[in-house]
Image (cartoon, rainbow, N blue to C red; front, side):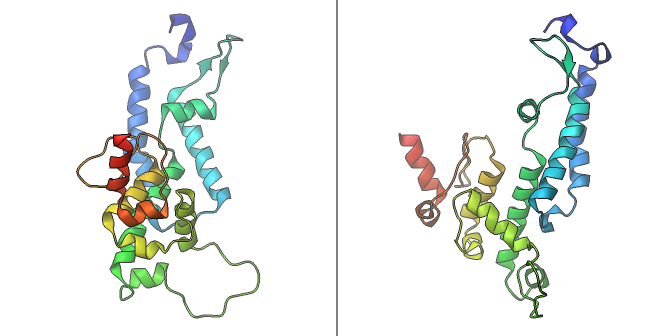
Length: 208
């Protein structure tokens, strides 16, 4: 990048941008997402969270000179995704999935389980049912190819559930000794894969 491609306000502040990004990742995001494991979000609320994060990231990374017009412009969504990942919605989904595994293994005797999964027994009011926390878990499982499966039964196997959490987050790291699937590409799991274990699935892929 030439010096002429750098905005005058951004000259000499590269280190500041890096520090600000790390501050957002290590401090600010945790403050914003405090208690997000129990959130029940609608698509509209997810979009509002993405708008908030994109606004913050544009402040962090600053403008960019357009290669055609040579004018300064804001970063597009795709460019922000390349500069910062995972986005705030994927972080919420993965944390919620991880917490759901703990809740499922607690059993019905625990108050947390009854509060998040149990039914109150009261008569449902008229109109459209409210979006429940458990509905979010089922929707996230459907995205990774496990729709219609009993998520409480799946969560009993820690390794397989950890594989699903990583699939929701879409991490890009290598496989370790935990016998759970972490792929370099977006992954989904069939019912056969979950029955026989994610580690067996990864070994077959590695042998190809």
